[in-house]
Length: 164
Image 1 (cartoon, rainbow, N blue to C red):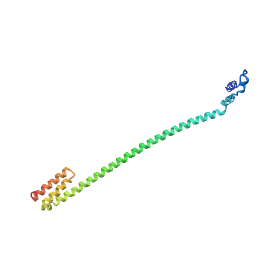
Image 2 (image 1 turned 30 degrees about the vertical axis):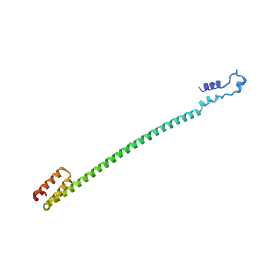
Image 3 (image 1 turned 45 degrees about the vertical axis):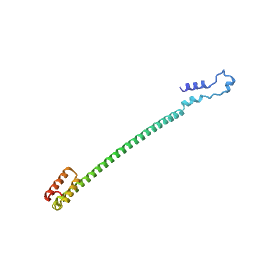
């Protein structure tokens, strides 16, 4: 095969015998080297270089893809962490609101117990006692608590007489 290539290159590069003198002065590049080049280690080097460039481009594409995927995953992880953090804040706020509601109910209950314990003193001034119990009814946390206050008002009026 090496010999065939050299023959082809030699045939292409040699001028024809019928060439005129003007044509003989025009020099075309000689392709004689091409046959030697194709069988030399240089073509293997060029092939290795082309293969390296193709591999490099493939690696660059993979790196770009991995980088994009990592950024997408990072953004998804951040969104999930933010959602979790917001859920924790919402839970903490709900717990805090429940604690405030519980404290308000406990405080109301303490005031109610004080009013019942001092009902005999409130009977001395029925108007003031009734105003105190009505204010307590307005602050009642629920219907059951309001009914308890209404019973206490009835007890106050029964002990102290009529409303002023």
